[in-house]
Image (cartoon, rainbow, N blue to C red; front, side, top):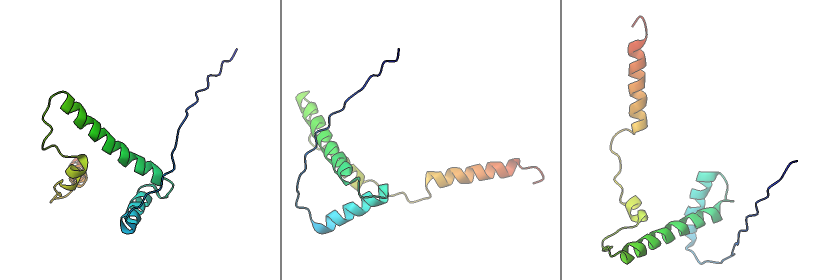
Length: 110
């Protein structure tokens, strides 16, 4: 006897209207298109941004509730914005070069 188990997931979506700077929205859409090759993921990306904002807010509240001083903390967006730019070749390029040298050293007749 075969038993089938069905799981039902209810998703409540809310349609919203926002006023956003036209140039900023165009750039956001370009980034989403670059990432996914379609604009059908716009809502998903907005949700990701909202979730990251809400998580940071929840963490800050939790640390305050535990008695930690949260003055001077910075958001992940600030960390991303202030991240230093790499000056040299990427680690991927360095590793590829190391592998090429290792293979060349082990080739017979060299």
